[in-house]
Length: 444
Image (tube, one colour):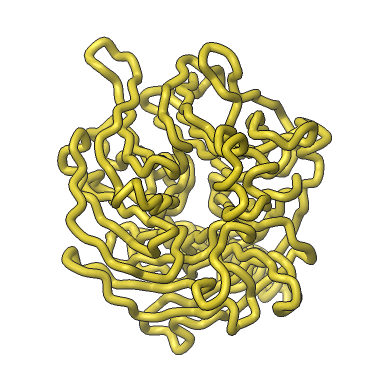
């Protein structure tokens, strides 16, 4: 006769296998919108949630930075509605976030402090939970303002924007393991043409290349934008370089001149491509990063975004999975543009739509049919009065035009300023968490 224990173990084992088969656990080259190629469990179908990392606003709700969950499944009864939010209990200029390689956790942080917040999104994807605060970044590295969180196998590479000594843009990267334990520091190069500034990270494992871009430091990004642009000396303190690194050794190999604050970096996700693009905020250009005939990495100005004389301020970009299209958001004119990248040497704008009075981040689904846009850039750079819209807006894209299908007013909902986004799915619920629940159920 089969014992109760054996029967229970067999049932749990079978359920474990079934659960593991519901997710794609292999490494992916996901746009979705800008995940590391080491991030597992790509959402190829309809996403269920958009996680929004929002800046707290004094006097609005609890005033704290928070991770907000919005239901984005069209068949859901709560479609286009906020279904959860979790605050960190303080304001730290919430900015960007990133998945761990197993996609069980989101790491997030703010630009005015040196803390990193870790949220569990696997136990219950609809209701993320704050499970850890990493507070040793400043002590271990001297860096301030963690910006980009980039998954490596079992580790997280964090790009900071500033430092605690003089709060300038001279900074570096910090490497942690997935438990939040510090491993190493990597300084942004200040010799050989390097300016020491940092912003985004993106890797191409096949080419053993890590690319980094550059922005500015705390003394600039925490100022009012309107005061900053009037300060000629301060405006000189923006990054004008990108760095090509040896990925395995994490050592700089070459400094590329890319004037005008190159921000987000997007590698083409087409398996046959080995090039990346970025956009420069101050000069309104698209730059192509690729190897020349001798195998040397070069940066080339290949397109203009809007009218640079009007300073549209390109902010976020999102590349399509086939590498043939690029979304570009420009903050000042609230415009979302689409560029045809069929020839990356000569991108062509084929579509433009005003999607808000101010727009910043843009994310798209893997199939490219859904696009999400948020509004906030920085607390002291956002517009004021009626132009200070704070939202998450969802759009459908049919290849010809964007159609808005829902909107969440973050001010009305007392949630703060909507900034960075990540996509979530019910199918990404942790198999370990489900198995633990089944074990508890079996013991009853």
